[in-house]
Amino acid sequence: MRRRILGLQRGSFALKGSNWFARLDHLTRERWKSDLRLLADEHHLLRAAIAGLPPARLRQLTPGGTVRIDRLICGIAAHDVYHAGQIQILKRLYRGTR
View 1 (tube, rainbow, N blue to C red):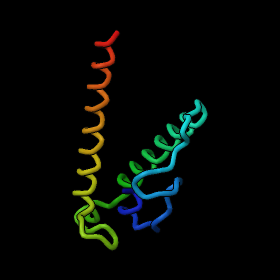
View 2 (cartoon, helix red, strand yellow):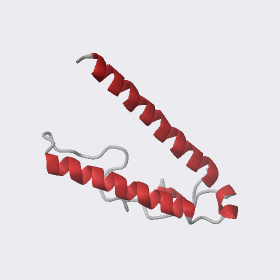
View 3 (cartoon, rainbow, N blue to C red):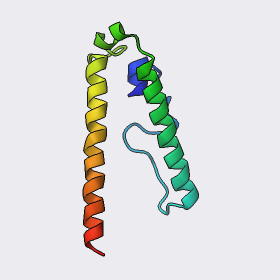
C-alpha cells in the first residue's frame, strides 16, 4: 500500500512476490525475528508516508490508480482491525484449550 500511495515502482518490496511470499518449510527463530522486524519496519514506513501527505493529497487518486488515497488508508486500517480481531479470537481459543 505504501508503494501505491507514494507511486513507487512495482517490485520495490523487500521480498519477492506480489501477494504471497515464498517461506521456508521450517521456520527458524532467526527467520521469524527477521520477518517481525520487516513487518515493524514496513509499518513504520507506511505510517510515515501517510503522515507526510499534505491534506489536499488525501482526496486525490493514487498515482496511476483509480482509488482515492483517503479511501485506501481507511481500507488499510479496516484490514488491520480485521486481523487484530482474528488474533484475539485465536488467543481466546488457545486459552480455552489449556
